[in-house]
Amino acid sequence: MSDGSITLQHDPVNLISNSAADTRNLGALFGRIAFPGLIIELIGPPGSGKTEFTRGIAQGLGITREIRSPTFVLIHEYRDGRIPLFHMDFYRLLDGQPVGEMDIFEYENDSGLIVLEWADGIEPGLSANRICVKLGFIEADSRSISIYTDNVIGEKFMKSLRINESL
Amino acid sequence: MAVVLGIETSCDDTSVAVLDGTRQLSLITQNHLHEHVKYGGIVPEVASRQHMKAIGAVYRSALDSAQINPTDIDLIAATRGPGLAGSLIVGFNFARGLSTALSKPLVSVNHLEGHVYACWIGDNQHIPPSFPCVCLVVSGGHTELTVMDDDGYHRLLGRTRDDAAGEAFDKVARIMGLGFPGGPAIERYAELLGDMSAYNLPRAWLADSMDFSFSGLKTAVYRARNGLLGPTEERRIFKDGSYLDFQGLKRDSIVRMAAGFQESVVDVLTEKSAAAVKQVGAVSMVLAGGVAANTALRKSIKAKVGVPCFMPKMEHCMDNAAMIAMAGSIRWHSQMDHNLLYQDVDINPSLELGSGY
Image 1: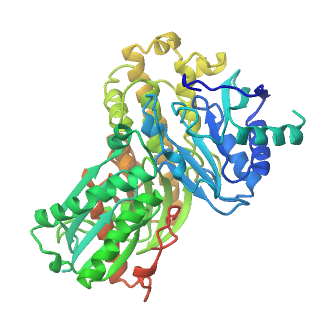
Image 2: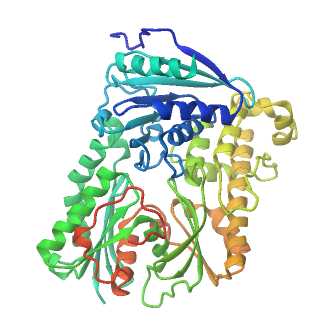
Image 3: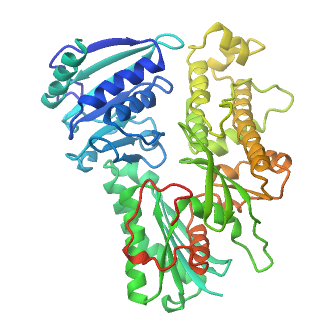
């Protein structure tokens, strides 16, 4: 991990979503099995479905408040679900530049689920509990979704994901 | 008139202002966004620390510039939410401490209500909006359409379902490489349109709803830039077939895209505001928040809503403490919250417009 790249401990799970509803449903599965302390990192260009995926997560957690973009205030907190959801977005901070060491995970790190957008520049190892979800365009409505992790906590989540979805 | 101190730390800016009645004596604002990047560390700790480091000096220079002493302050108003928790705490606790030390009352303010009350700031001849008044608060973080029936009473009519309008400006500007902040950059390019035609971008009307959606618009520009549009979409947006010009970001096509994007946002905001005014029988309209600084939007709303339209001065469109002082003053003097002890209230990062103090 010293070279700054993610070392895969297991194969990634690759899926295709054919609609926004597909993406949301996958997010809902994440929300149902997520546990406090987990960090879900969403990677993908504008319109690839990051917010839609987060809406699904919220739904899976039983959150009823509407999910809106946290770009401006950096963090939106939702505390009306099974566990708290901290929806973070570093779009404005990174300004397209890769960032080295970051210390974000002081943030209530064990009490809830963190969903992180636009954090592509963060070095691995610093967000030790993360699972990455990479979204990409295929066609107008379809998206490629790749799920991978580089740590034990993430792998625990992946295992539970495979069982629940028979992936 | 009463001297009111306003304190605003909901997001990137540490801002302190002094009002005498409705008249502004001083407004000092310090922005920290770029500190975050330099620092390398990040939210929310760094944000709170930046506010901590700045607030004492910003407070002192606001008093100096107003030429008053701390003992001249009659009321202290501070933002309670919405915003970033760690940032809100710094400003609100500073206000709480000051209130205790000076034995002067504290009032907590909803940041979004502050944006609306920015239109109440002015000299003694200044006439504020009459009720019922439709309010459109558009900024980097918010897009809310409400009707205000009386001081402090908002009914939510519509809001964004995804991205805020100001956020769409920033993101589209970045996609086209126009830099930050995106609002002024897009506006500058759009003004160069001249005899050219603007690209025909989609408008999310969301039929039978007063809600907004700007995410699809941003995605359309992103996909156009990266050659990801389907043929039908391509023909609809680029009627003259200049799709490749835009992918190459040729100057004229940036101008046409900036103009097309701005028209789309302005059209939707204007139409919905006009419909809201009609629907609730409003007698005035307030346009506030950072995006209210956009000249095309100001012109369009003014021309089409059919009632007197109020907009804050440019310095009061962005996040600022003068609007917090104004809103706090009105809230305090109208005794809207009866005998609520503001010293004991907590900050609320997800406070909504219309949910009171």
